[in-house]
Length: 383
Image (cartoon, rainbow, N blue to C red; front, top):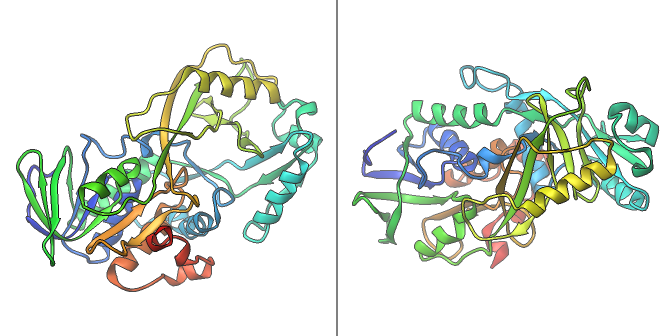
């Protein structure tokens, strides 16, 4: 990792080395934008939202623009470039959306919303749902939808594939870089850091995750109204002798709980989204208790004690879509933020869009084919 800013003048300085910033650094460096600096305030990349993800690729998950960006990411994730990763990035999983009695209308609405872009979506009866996940309680399942296209993701391999590839192509990664002052001189950003180093950049990319509005204030830009939201999760052991590795992700249609197999255990969550401040967020005991109660209500699983608990931040603006594009008021500032809980599954498509816009090339054809409306992600929509 670079100890100084060399060169001191770069074309693009990206703040945030989570999956959003790392994937964009890769897109820019691999396709010829030089030089690129990837700047991270922490002592390691991907420490917060990226490192605490449930690691699911689900084209049926998220608002419309997110789903388009996710679909556009699939081909890369299924067959990444040679040498990008030593292991497959995707593994079969499936997703089972469960409606309790009284939630049938919500399940029909979800089906109608997803069917056009998810042609393999299947209606399941109670009995068919229990055939896939036999611990579900029959009285808790009125009907279900099954999405066979949901997959597990190797987030570590994906993040470090982007970081390695970006560095091989000339991008520099700077860790522990705390910005203290910034101004735009009419041609370039002049960026000063706590240790006295200085960097000049033609364009600054705000990929700072939950800290994106904090960074915007340092840059003199108007915040976008980003709200970090805490989501807690936990792992627990499956009952002795129970074969659970083949289960899909099981999620309530109202997104009030989910559970899935994870590295020989089960991972559960209350799927909470509690507004908080940008921080090294910790799980709340009440969140964990609510998640355990919800899972025990819909299934015969008994969770005596989680083997691990944690929390992550999922950051949203008001309409729930990402913010990708040049700031309409602050020269030289490009936003690449507000990915909510969808940033990893959509990273390839989102970074391809951002890199193309930074080059002035417009919306890539692959994203046009997926029906992406670029206006739905532009920063100007929020002003």
